[in-house]
Length: 142
Image (cartoon, rainbow, N blue to C red; front, side):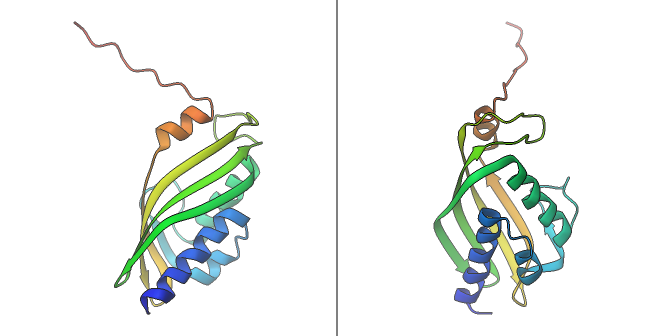
């Protein structure tokens, strides 16, 4: 696949997260797709679909932006920002009504025009704080 074709696949991936159109996963992901950043999610397309559905149940007014995208060989890397309103429960966090921002960088490997693996680095501590989480650090002895 060409580098531009790979980038187009990743743009469809980002579109899926923004719109909630989970059928996009069938088009762009290998049946054995693995998200190495979320080992708690089931492998494959159905795990991604469930995650996208859960995200859309917890958030509305979703806007995604890709700041940079780099493609080389079978790899695409991109930096993203997702903004949304927290209108439903997300894990242990009840809806806050707040506008929240999630930032990260993904590295995706593609084979034969399909996503096969993903690694993500995101500012999850800031995300949890925006959702109302509190960090409790153990006291260190003096």
